[in-house]
Image (spheres, helix red, strand yellow):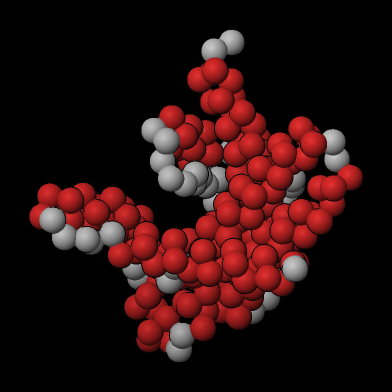
Length: 228
């Protein structure tokens, strides 16, 4: 086995498990909290589960992370199939939708904190194993913080957008909710088109990713401080 192949396999081994765990528990949390507040749609479809294969999206969970890894992108990102939620089935749709939407990012923040705390146990492992586990924990901390921050962007259908729809008063809530069919287009424009346009014009238009990266970095440092 060549050194390059071995290095690639090692990178896969320390990135894939944290990513799959992060997106699986993120989606399962949405389904669990929806069931808690009266909607069993996700449960009926088998999505309130820790089985990652129930949540895998062929592009978002497999192809996108693989492409980022092969192109040596400075970050690894992915997403799962969204858990279906019938918000009208919730006992108090406007209020409960906030908790359902917040459950995913909250789970990622929790996993990031657990990852940081587990660094304290590395001393009980043999050196070679400890290094591998440390890389997994480091990546789990980064991935979960990044997923939480990204999903909290205030654009429907991201969790942050749905939380804001639940918090805003009637007219503003409906106006923001009406953007949901265009949410992915807005994200693609902000995350891909504007940076490309900036590269053509010599301007730095990658402000969304800069903001996400800066906030993620601050949260990672805060979690490490909390974990001691």
